[in-house]
Every structure is written in structure tokens, then in C-alpha cells.
Length: 450
Image (cartoon, rainbow, N blue to C red; front, side):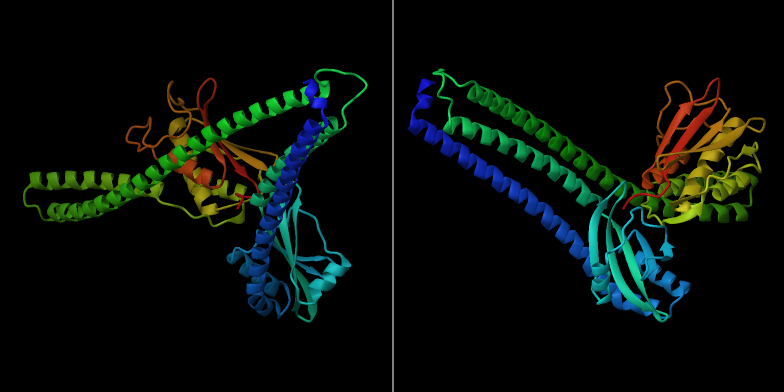
């Protein structure tokens, strides 16, 4: 290592450090440009969408008043241009918010407002608070006054990319600092002592070895994760194809059952002998049972699309409880929990299945109770009964065609679980002590993210 003190060798090592440093700087610049291009692409998409819809929005807003503002907001939401739409006057006072206020605070400066008033579209963000949003501003004439239309668009992919780029920037920065220290030590060695190996250079070599080992370990982890994700995607594609095939078979079976059922009814009505009528009635009853099974299976496997809106959860739960108490035990309701965002029709179907299962398990002399808790933007509804509970070894999550009820199909809980997962929520089962079952449904109050 004493030869490191020769000027030619020091110069060669110094040049190598400089080249590596330049490569790191180039990687740093590429990271910054990539982040800028992604933001520009998303921003241009938002701006182009608003510019394309501007003539229709101007026509909707021209009469002025809350009705015209609501019509313009509905136009924006139907076109999926934003998550939230707000109308302000030129002083920044809110005139309309639909379906709710944007979860970030921002108002353009005087220069920015003047730019918007000159028929330009202003796009700012992303504004990263608890909820990340890209905000778009446009000015319109509405009923003799000028109003600002603000569109709030969720951009989680931009925030995720920004977080990833920050990690890369930190790595590039650390590498540049290490290279600068190493270059200084190589080009300007300590001549006060004739040591065979500079301690700083040895520490640098050791650090580089650790970084290389860590990089190799991360590469192996990424390769394993990529293989696992590819296997999961292949499995999901196979399941999707199997589901489509099964749905087609079930549809054809349902058509055949309808034909058999029709002939059985004709035979039952026109039978001359009692034993023929009894046989036809047995065929009809079995076909009706099979038709119910196929119909519920089709409901389970079909693809649902969410019609999101804000609705009163307490009122919906009260409707479900009123229907299910006609033939079962009374259902104890919680305090009104307020409004949430979701597909009211689908969620009502899910809670109807859950409350019906609880009522059937509890029996006429049992008890069914609903409780609601809220925490950190989420709402949890617990459906509690004092029935026998599910047996030991039973599934902790809903499983299709698993049931403990005589004559049950085992599709009520899986259908409810499917609807809850569509809302990006969770459904969990647990046993109560000393007896009974608790079904917990956790939903985001602001609805599923885009």
C-alpha cells in the first residue's frame, strides 16, 4: 500500500473517483428529471381534461345560482375529472362544495388569480398533507359575477413516486459525500506519517464493500419479490378466467333449469294421476331450489361497479333492522353514526345478509346488537349475536359455500365480504364469550380512494 503515495497512482485513483462522482451526479439529475416528467404528464392530463370540458362548464355556470353550480359540479364528477368540486367567489368565499370540501387548504396568490381571470387554467400541487391532492383553478362568468371553479384530484401515484425518488436522492447524496471524502484523501494524502495504508482509505474500502454487499442483498430481495408478484398475477389471471367460465356455465344451467321448471309446472297442472302430479311437484321444487342457488352464485361472481355518494349510515342500518325484526329477535341499534361515502345500495345488501345471519343464529329469544365506532378516518360496524357461534376449526374469514345452517348456501357472508372489499374495507369474524359471533365491518368514512 506504500505505492499509493506515488503521484501517478494517486492521480489515477483521483480520476477514477471523479468519474464515479460524475456518474452519480448524472444519476441524480436523471432522478430529478424523471420526477419532473411524471408531474408534468399528470398535470398536463388534468389541465387538458379541464380545458376540454370548459365549454360545457361555461354553459352550465352561465345562469348563476346554486342550481347552475351544482350542474357544473355534477358534470365534472360524471367526467371523472376530480374527486371534489368547489365553487368560490373572487374573495375566496366558498359558494358550493360537492361531494365535500377538499381535504387540503390552498388559495392562489393575487398574481395567480389574475392569471386565472385571463382565461388560463392554474394547476398547483401536489399538496401533501394527510391526503395528497392536485388542485386546478378556472374562472367563469356565472349570473353576472365571476366565480372560481376548483377541482381537487387525488394523485397517490405521484406521491408514491416522490417518496421513492426521495430515497434515491438520499442514496445518491450519501454516495457523493463518500466519493468526495475518498477523492480528498487520495489526492491530498497525509504526509506527516509514512503509514503503509491510510486509515481513512481502509475505512472507505470497507464501507464500499458493505454497500456492495447490501446492494447485492437488495437485488436478491427485489428479484424474489418480483417472482412472487408475477406468480400472484398469473394465479389471479387463471382465477379470473375460471370465474368467467363458471359464470357462463351457471348462466346456461339457469336457462336449462327455467325450461325444466316450466315443463314441470305444465305437467303438474295437467296430470291425470296423483302420483304423476306428486312427481312433477317434486321436480318443480328441486328446480326452484337449484335456481335460487344459481341466482345467488351469479350475484356473488358478477362484477360490481360502485355508485359512490354520501348517505346516512344510521338511517340505512335502521331500514335493515326494521326488515329483519319481522320474523326474528329485535335488533338493538347504535347512536346515529352520521354520513359516510359509499354505494348505499350495495352496503345495504351486505348489512342485510349480516343482520339476517345474526338473527337466524340468535333465534326468536336471542339478542342482536349493532355498535359503531370511529377512529382515524375509519368507521367500524359490529354485528353481535348471542347464538351458538361458529364451530371450532371453522373459517376465520368468509368462505364460499361454507355454512352451519340447515339448507343454507354459504354465500351470504362471502357476498358481504366482497362488497366491503370493493369499498376498500375489511370484514372479520370472531367468537364472543361465553357464546355468540361478532362480525366487524371496517369502512373508510370518505369512501374508497380512486
